Length: 269
Image (cartoon, rainbow, N blue to C red; front, side, top):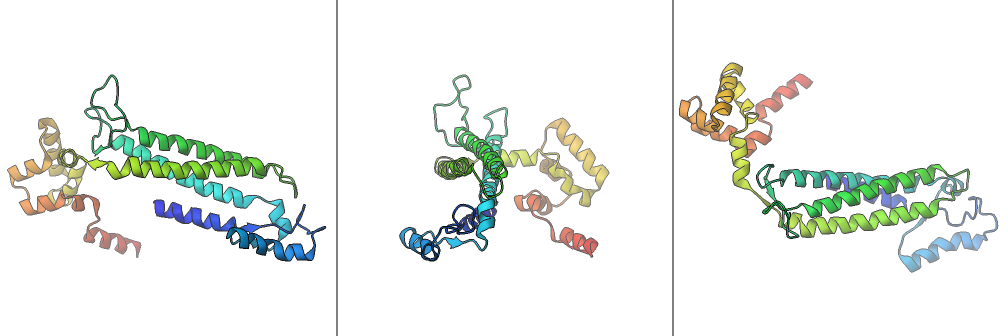
């Protein structure tokens, strides 16, 4: 997910190297000497290592700020994905009782004053708020670029301010999330295993082996008696222990089986 975001940001960032320097006010180059047009980017690159390149059409590059919009959109997409990731962390770490409780987030503060033992997901919440800000900045950049008229783009200052703020705050949010949350979080493996064992949804993997009616009856009994599906299968000897272990293993529940893939390929043909 974030590798795609990194690719998008890098590609959009490369496009920002295209500039209209030498085009003067409206891109025609009027009042700019030939020496200036030929040397300004050379000298600037020598002093900054920015590796800037001249736009192939200086008038078009002066008229439009779409490259700023593109870069802003890439950062917004990263912000959306970061916020979604933070939402997942908050949900999976909810607890310790009335929640998922699958992840254990590191405690970064004393915790809740009315719920002892509760770890507040303050780091994911910080990232959420940065994401909200970046999404708002993207709207600012969009409207400022749209509001230009002919070769006049009077609102570039607010565009650059929004872009720089988004870039800085996203960088800080990423560092904070990784250093103070992701690297320190742990998985509550026992709770995850219990959730899987008692899940009526995971029992659907039994339908191809036991049939729909038998599987449905088994699920109803498990829900009524609060027993784990694998325990019922072992007790009733409906399937071999090895097959039950395979079906309810993490790989068996999350990875497509070869026979299913072959069936899908056959249908596609």
